[in-house]
Length: 232
Figure 1 (cartoon, rainbow, N blue to C red):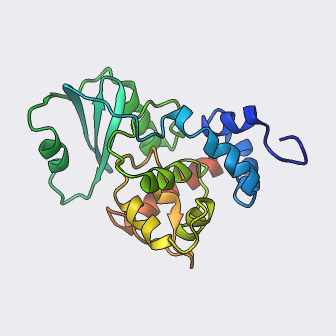
Figure 2 (figure 1 turned 180 degrees about the vertical axis):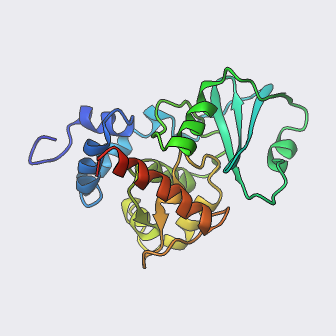
């Protein structure tokens, strides 16, 4: 960081592109979460990493990747681009009716083993390895408010947490914490956009679509990885 600890434009792009290591991520986070000037520089780069309502693909084929392990999840990809991730409870039906209803005539391929992105998600869930360099689309995000909520959520560093009110403040919409929670409940890209890192103002784990036990499990995965690798 330069200019009295403010980000340069190139540093802001580096941060939103997630090309820094965890320690630098933590340092940058401690600065920008309370610096309105640097947040504006980060937000200026949102579209450059794909956070745009103009990002409207028209898929003809989707690839469905399902994993039935300790944490059950599925991924839908358009070519190599992730458009949706689902995390399932153990007693839940392993079917995405939203995808079926949204794309009734689309061809869906099954579980291709050469897909790199789902295997990076597996590495995260099994070993805690941070998810990096995954191509995803904001195709299913419908409003600018939701897009902004998910952008700031995306920037929360691995292993860190913030509150719904924090995100509302970063969006210059104080008092909209409840609406932030609603947008996160409909996050189409959990894990990649880490809504599990957003907690209540009292520090409690609340508001996760698959339950607070799953939220706790994901946060523990990250803390264990950081401790094991002596990153904290």
